[in-house]
Each structure stands twice: as structure tokens, then as C-alpha cells.
Image 1 (cartoon, helix red, strand yellow):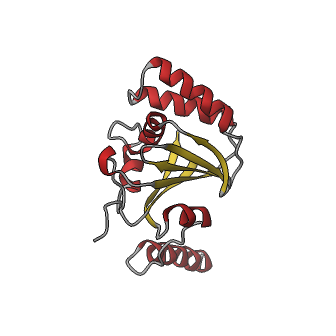
Image 2 (tube, helix red, strand yellow):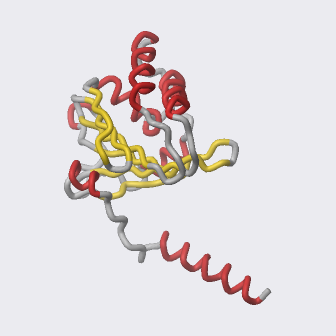
Image 3 (cartoon, one colour):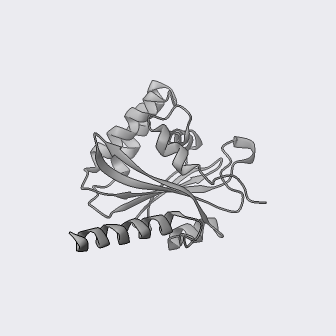
Length: 187
């Protein structure tokens, strides 16, 4: 009993230190640094579905922070680390369904976007990472485990894709809040 209590207390202390003001800054993955330069972690959270952890999401921003407005938008990267095996087709279908829920694009656009995602998104396993780099006015570049996967040169698709997580109408508002926690530009 005493040993279990010590283990539990040690775990709690480690958790508190990792989340507190003395926590070490997260180190950006190599592809994030390459794309954003002086990247910083704006926020992170876990997406769950019926109590099951699906992935951990991290929003990485550059020196300009997260700027959603088209006229002064800055690049940012959303990194998803999967907690379980998921078929790429399911990822594409769920993404298309979320785009429809937030009202992104026309029915014809969403159908074309769905086909693009079906062609791009691979099957994932526990620990796999899929990342999307938002390129303002250009589109999105996708990565799998830090290696280039595909580029979609369609600004409307890019906006709709990232709005799944970052739009106020997202179906995961707590995750959105966690991702945008420290996304403002730093002076």
C-alpha cells in the first residue's frame, strides 16, 4: 500500500511539474523547425471519442503566431500523434464529415476534397504522426512521421481542413481552446 502511494505521488508530482511554469519548453520536430523557423508550441490537447483517446494534437506556430485572417495569415502546423490504429479511409471520411458540419465549401468542393483526402491519408498505427502545414494563400503540405506526404495547392481546401480543429464551429471546442492557448503573436 505504501509503495503504491509513493508511486502515485511521484506520478502526480511529475505531472504537475510538466504542466507547471517550470516545465521545459517543447522541442519542435525537425520538419516543424524547417517549415516555421523559430517554432513554438502554441497548445496541445487530446481528442477522444466515446472515452477512447484517438490522437494528441499539437499546434505549432512561427514568430507571427496564429493569424487566421487571410490578409495577414501566417504559416502554422498541426501535428496529430495517433494513439491507435486507424484506416486512412476512416480518417478521410471523418475529415470530410467534419468539413460538412462546420459548413466549409460547397457540396461539390467537399466531394472533391474527400477524394483528395482518400488518395492522400495513409493508414496509421499507434505512435504514427500526421502533420499539416498551413501555407497562407497557397494550400497545405502534409507529412507522415516528419516526411513529406503530399501538397494540395488549394487555399479553400487548406482553410476548410484546418477549420476542423480551429474554427469556432468545431465539434471539439475544448480541443480548439487547448490548441489556441498560447497562439497569439509574441512581441
